[in-house]
Amino acid sequence: MNRVLPVLILSFSVLFSSSLFAEPAKGLNVIVTTADRQTQMMSMVISTMAVKKQGKQVNITFCGEAGDLALKTTETPTFLPAKKSPTMLLKGLIEAGADVKVCPLYLPNAGKTTDDLLPGITVAKPPVMTGVLLDQDFQNLTF
Image (cartoon, rainbow, N blue to C red; front, side, top):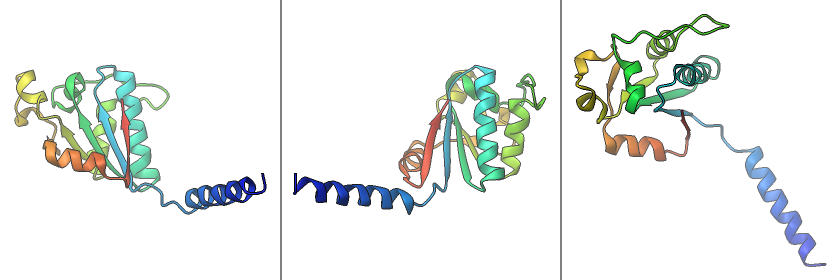
């Protein structure tokens, strides 16, 4: 018991001090795959808060059915209480400097081209995306 107590104290102090002095994340990597508009809205709300309220960098990638949100022709419903839509928030995020991409598989499998995307949205490159997702200065969120 006499040897265990000092080890426990040292372990606790190392754990506590490392979390106390940990640098906050530089930003978020947000991956949206759901077609559910309410969930897409929540991903845009969190991304907006990170950019506008926390001053963080946000990287958004749309894959699968969520890729439709990146299209010029997509209309999304407004949600209470803000009476805003995922499309409205997405456009605001692009204007605020968020890096927004669609998965490289999305356009050819949806029968679309880059001309169909909202201005400011590009196609992700897998090697670059891998680096972004593995960057420990960013937290990854999936919706």
